[in-house]
Length: 419
Ligand code: HEM
Image (tube, rainbow, N blue to C red):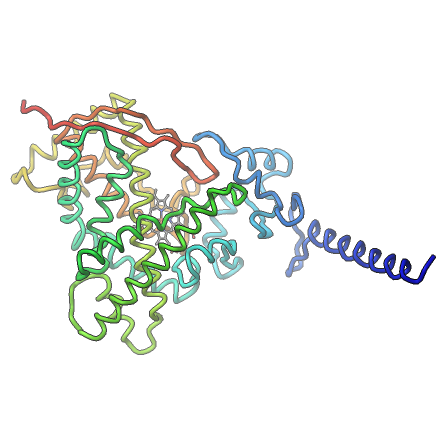
């Protein structure tokens, strides 16, 4: 055997040993504490179990990814998704405890791709006092007090106007309409003194900055969406940066959320810097419309198929209207709080129940839950008291595993004929 082939053999042997070691580490990841990992599989090298995790399933199904593993390993199992070593728990007590013990027994982290797409200076990725403080500032705008003081009137007005336009348009996409109406009033609530063309640009960026990219990375269209979201973030950042600069220089007050953030930023030791201010404005502008329009579309789709629910809803809102002195006024805070028992099912979705953690829990509980409920109530109120509606196309939903519409809800509305 020649000297050359011996060297080749040594190199091949080293490569084989290296790969074997790497595969061993892949399938048996080390953990930093003294415990042991739950059962499970790390899937294929590099891609892990990502493909199966994103497999679409029906709206009311437990995704097969979870179902299969729960049967095989129980409620706690290990896996690898999108390059992140992951332990999944499907036990509500454990999940509740994880939410409750943040920063004690559990450290918050998101897969790298989340951080890359939505930006690292985000409320979602902050912990401890910084997170607490940003949350408190956010509540100023979309918590109960902020909604009552500053939002409900605009919400009513925008909803009424948008429905009026839609009544003359024929069939329209309800999710799109709700998304547009929220963006139309939320953008000036965040930054109020933009030139019309700059405001339109910012609204377009808010619209494009969505969560639709969270799906299989092996689907080429995912990368197109990621590119658009990334571009929207970059463009919105430029607009907000410019607005922030002008506001700082002019020292003018406009009573918007940018004022609130600037005031905080100028305090000694403020946790806010330019990046975190921009990021918060962007996240609220984007997140407020997506989840709300989606849930409103599902709700209208549901009530259109359940005449008893629709009748009960109409009864509740007609009664509100009957009692109201100024029929032109929209839903008041008092009506919303005291007279919408059926609309809000009488169930407090924010009470931190272990069986319904749709809004998260503990320190991470959703700050937008009140906003969502109020906007949905206002929309349903104007829809059922002022219009008759008919469904032109029902919506269809799948989970990937996030809920996603494969067909949008199209409806027709026409003003109710006077009784
Ligand atoms: C169907 C509607 C919604 C659902 C199901 C939902 C669900 C959630 C969940 C599960 C979390 C916790 C995330 C985590 O653990 O890190 C969360 C947090 C959050 N949500 Fe929502 N949300 C909805 C609507 C909204 C709306 C309308 C807004 C804004 C107006 C909003 C703003 C936020 C913010 C800012 C956080 C971060 C809170 C924090 O880190 O402390 N959400 N949401």
